[in-house]
Image (cartoon, rainbow, N blue to C red):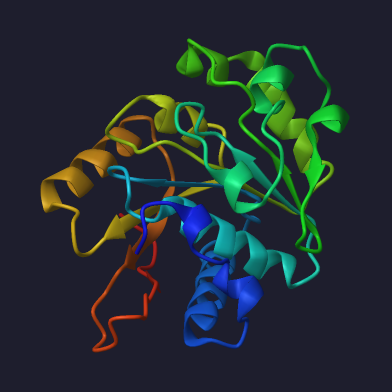
Length: 229
């Protein structure tokens, strides 16, 4: 898999009948059924390290939700190396950082995309203090306000062992998906990422294992592994 999501099409949109798209729909369904008593509406997606496919996983999952006529929002919470504006072909001149520093309102930073039912709040200008901005009371109140407007909110977060940003975002999320590249991720890195999330009592819904060799070098399969203990 390419390390950059903007170099690969959004398969669930481009080819919704493909086996890979079906895997994303299965992931969506498994998330929905992972909690019987409460609805999971704010989901953070992260990985142990860079280049593992977290952003690709997030955008395809977002499209899978949007295809069920839900109002879906993608938030690029990676304020260090944002990519979602490239993937969804929108401007990143303004976004989450402008919102959290009270420069702009939610209405002003929301952008439509070429995918029906899917909107985005990009990262905006890269700030000198991402962790502090994400930990602000404004971030908490913003998520609560956005929940009144959208059925599902998916937040792209930085790798969980690199910085504390993912831990901060996870505390404002209903659940976390950890993406692991079967080809390159070391077991120790995955355990470290999980430990970092466990330290803040993040609810890890499961792990998406990608880049699995299924005797087809052009295919990338995604699997969902239940709820982590």
